[in-house]
Amino acid sequence: GAVVSQHPSWVICKSGTSVKIECRSLDFQATTMFWYRQFPKQSLMLMATSNEGSKATYEQGVEKDKFLINHASLTLSTLTVTSAHPEDSSFYICSAELAGVNTGELFFGEGSRLTVL
Amino acid sequence: AQSVSQHNHHVILSEAASLELGCNYSYGGTVNLFWYVQYPGQHLQLLLKYFSGDPLVKGIKGFEAEFIKSKFSFNLRKPSVQWSDTAEYFCAVTTYSSASKIIFGSGTRLSIRP
Image (tube, rainbow over all chains, first blue to last red; front, top):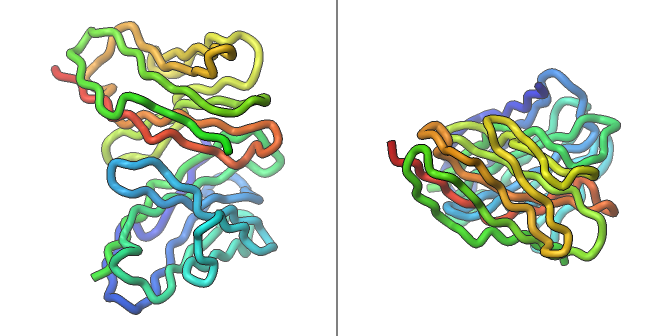
């Protein structure tokens, strides 16, 4: 099956620094990737839709200058949390959809846990 | 706006018990419905999906779900659970007009007593 990998799996950083999280589709091409945030004991909240070669589409309430998304190739999307603060600590998950398929069936990464001190 | 409700936040069962997890969605148009499972320390993975056709959908590991359009429901069932079914289960929906924008329910944590 299609595999999506995230890196790093977990990261601890100091307040005010920036952190980059990578999302790769290992064995398929993905024109669209999605970034979610998951708080403890809560559901996944869609943050943004990452489109290869174009600007990301952010959900309401998500600061695009805070969460920079780049989707430079068909297999890689990155999420950069800029000037991170403790309230940004969370579990970030990405998913990808097979290029040319538009059914909503998604393949998820293992998630990246960010802790901001 | 579309939403998905999972009313059971935490379900505890003994092995061999039957399982039914509730899922209701709010949207008046055509939907695609999914159940995803997240085993401890692992990725979210697709358990089963409904796009069209037979409303009773069979998934992996003996799970099934029934789409009841009149009730806006897509409940997940398994006749006899195993300890290995311990996981978080998420119901999700996409709409015909926005097939890639998936909306998740809040999840149900299933704990199976050996």
